[in-house]
Every structure is written in C-alpha cells, then in structure tokens.
Amino acid sequence: MRRPCLPIDRTAADLLEKQEVCATRLGTLIDDEHEDDDEDDFQGTYNPAPVAYWPKGSRDTRAKSAPSAGAQSTMKTDFPGFSPEALKFFVQLKRHNNRPWFLKNKETYERQIKEPMLSLVLEINSELRGLAPELVTEPKRAIYRIYRDVRFSADKSPYKTHTAALFAPRGLGKHACSGLYFHFSPDELLVAGGVYMPGPKELLAIRNHIAANPKALRIILAHRQFAKLFGRLEGDQLARVPKGFAPEHPAADLLRYKQFLAWIKHPPELALSQELLPTLVQTFDTLMPLVRFLNAPLKPVKKEMIA
Image (cartoon, rainbow, N blue to C red; front, side, top):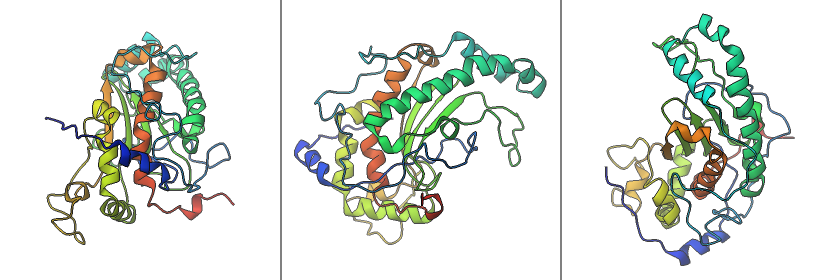
C-alpha cells in the first residue's frame, strides 16, 4: 500500500507552540492487564498546560530528521539490549506454551527478560523526564504481565510470547486515550503510539477536536519525521463520515477513523543491541505531537485524579 507524504508548512507548525495540550495515555495494543494496576505517586498526573505539541528540545526543534531504521545513534546508553537467550526463550515458548515448560524455564524468563525489561523501562523513564514528563510511568504499571487472560478466548495458551510496556500517566483513563507502547517478540520489535480503544465520549471529543483543528493534525501527519517513520495514520475506519459531521467536511477523511495509531516494526534482533533504547526514545519523540494532539480534548477521569 502506498503511503503519501504531504508537504509540510513550517510556519503553521511553529504556531502549534502556542496551543494547549494535555498529558497522554495509550489504549493498549494488547487486551490484557498490567502487572499491577495500583495507583501511586511515582507517575505524573493529568495537568493540562500550555505546552508545545513538539517536545521541547526534540529533533523537530533542532531541525534534524529522525534516524531511519538501522541507523546508528549517538545517544549514550548503559542498556546493552536483551540477550540472545531472551529471544531464544520466546521462540521456544511459542512451541511449548504450557505451564510445565514455563515453570521449568521460569528462572530464564526472570533473568533474561523480566529483569532487563525493568532496567529498560527505568532508562526510558529517565529520557521521558526531559522529553515527555507526563508519561513517566512506574515499571510495575508500565510492564505487561506474561500471563494471558484466557477466560473469553478460544486460544487457551497461558503465556504471551512477547514482552511489552505502556507509558501513560494516570488521569485520562487506562485504555481510552493516547500514549506510547512497544513490544519485543520472536517476530518483531514494534514501537507505537496513539489511541487504540477510545470510548464513545473520548472518540466524539477527538473527532470534534479534529473537526475544529484539521490543519494542525495534517501538519503533524505530514511532518518529515512522522512521514519517514510511519507513512500515515493507521487504524480502523468507518465507511462513511460519522453522524453529526458534514460529508464534505475538510477533515472528512480523518473523521472516519475509529482508532488513531502509528507504528513501526523492526527485526527482533534490534532488541538485542545497544541501539534498542535510542530507537525507542527517538521514535517516541516523533510520536509525541500526535499523542498530545489526540489527548488535548480529553477530560480527566476523576477516580484517577490525585487529591
């Protein structure tokens, strides 16, 4: 499928610096629970503030383009990547997805996947404090469990064959708003951002925001970094413009979306290298304008607010 790259209007992009946006939250790309859903004071809170769509000090403000897949980064990192044993574990788990095998090899999972994942999330949080502080997320909330919820699934395999993390602050609802996600599996390293599962109220709010600000969203989607990495906006769409919006609306093509996503896939071997952390951070940097635009119209969830 061909992915159009639209021309960018830098003057309009600069005007985005004056618009108000809010904190972010990603509806998960996999429908399972986190390791621990308890709220605590580690994370940032929902606090709408007049900040730029593009992160301060991002590659956009420095007039540099994001590195392409496989490009070497100059970012310093102490995280060496996952070990080859981690990839081997997931490959074998796909063949032996049962409790006896997992229990026999659980020590390998703990040592080669769970512990490195904890270190990786802490490293990402360190970078997010300067890039997107509202997304700093405690590891036990960010990292997904390996155990699958099979209650309503025809597939009764008890374990996931990937490790994943979601970066989202409390305040906007767990699955209804926009944020950042990645997973590492035997098949791929996937890095993503956007809104996966908005509720009816959130979807309407996002569509109203798009209808009122179509040029701002088009600038974000047409930006050279975004177009180079992701090509275009992805997600399920309606066949026609939703009710309440004119069929000839200037943003008709954007209003049809039911999901608002962007992602890029890399070979799983990238997760075994020291380039993993820089790749994640640089991709998240490019995703932040979209994430913040989508969250701008959303209201905080009262039960997740801090007193």
